[in-house]
Image (tube, rainbow, N blue to C red; front, side, top):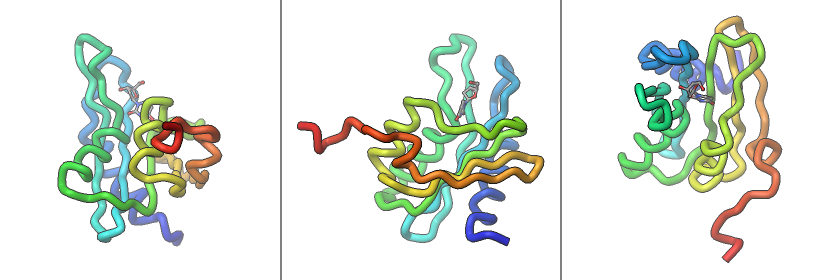
Length: 130
Ligand code: THU
């Protein structure tokens, strides 16, 4: 039992709703807000491919649009043996809203790794740059 089990379970549940008919790569994410609320998201693909939105950004935009601002952790779940980290675009967005949170990478086989956001996104561009 780890402190991230609930978050991983939420990401796993969100993954069930993944709309990924083009890649067949189903992703679930979950974000824990400082309010205690957990927001899940799944990837949503599109026939135009480029309009696809990653699970992490769906979770983030759900939370932001509900008025949340502070976040404690984010989890990403796939069925890949090699654990799936957020893509570059998602890292930029996670940094903006979550800062140096623990990023929990998990798969359906029970693999779990926790990486500080700082490690995944070492020299960020953010509002401190201008
Ligand atoms: N994807 C995510 O949702 N999150 C990630 O961290 C990596 C990639 C999605 C986008 C696309 O629907 C599929 O995975 C394949 O790239």
